Image 1: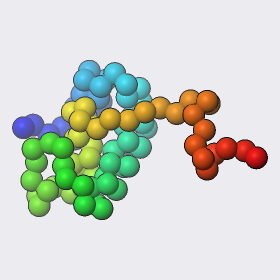
Image 2: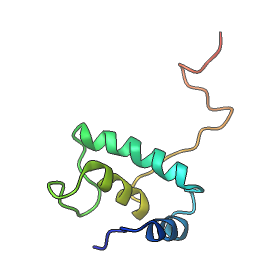
Image 3: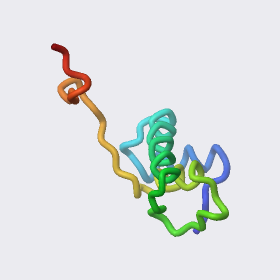
Image 4: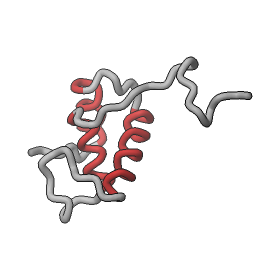
Length: 85
């Protein structure tokens, strides 16, 4: 398994394989949320040694490979905390 190591590889990979990720900022936000899950005990969704790689690196690679799903909120998607009284 090859891990993207340079900024060019990250940019090229994210745009080619994951059309839902429309910006590098969204890539970082999704990876950060997944990294928190990994830090709290979730297992990696890719074949990688967690002892050799930090959760942030694993999460970024998972997002790049498309194993992490996410959903964009729209104006109509108000959660219980977001509703106005």
